[in-house]
Image 1 (cartoon, protein in one colour):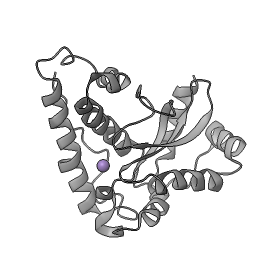
Image 2: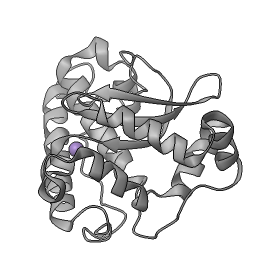
Image 3: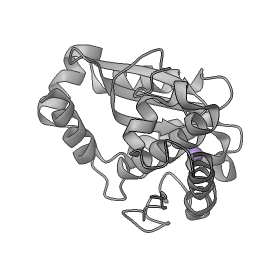
Image 4: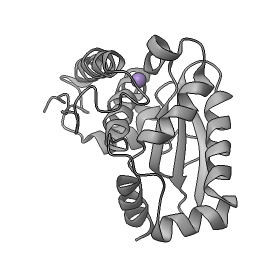
Length: 203
Ligand code: MN
């Protein structure tokens, strides 16, 4: 069963306050689609052709570089679209907010640690907030299209928030200023979705 491009849960211009519509459209229809096309080509007529994306991701390091890079690209972008929204939400509430405060000291301190993880990722990659196997919030970054669910991840966990820090994610508006993009991005985080993922990971 070939993988297909998921629709965005909002219009291309919905995140304009932080990410311009042209970047969103190219990112979705070109970059994300290319990962899907290459993933489908990599697994066609192989023993992996009928595996779920989650199964491919969990074993990405042992299957092939093509599955690691393009399966990761498909998983990461599908996730990324879902943790953003045009409906400004300010910040987290409830158990997630309490855990962020207990783990990092404050929401601002968590953001700072997250932004540092993204800013210091050399080249292309992602910054992550995830829940570890023993239920703890943790921040990490991964190279290329790796993620914390992969067998090859240095810091393993269940992602509840992730940020694409590849240049293609921000270059049209922010050029070389990755930290400015990261700072602005917090205004479009879908905290309801992050809380949903947090609660599921903790359950
Ligand atoms: Mn991307």
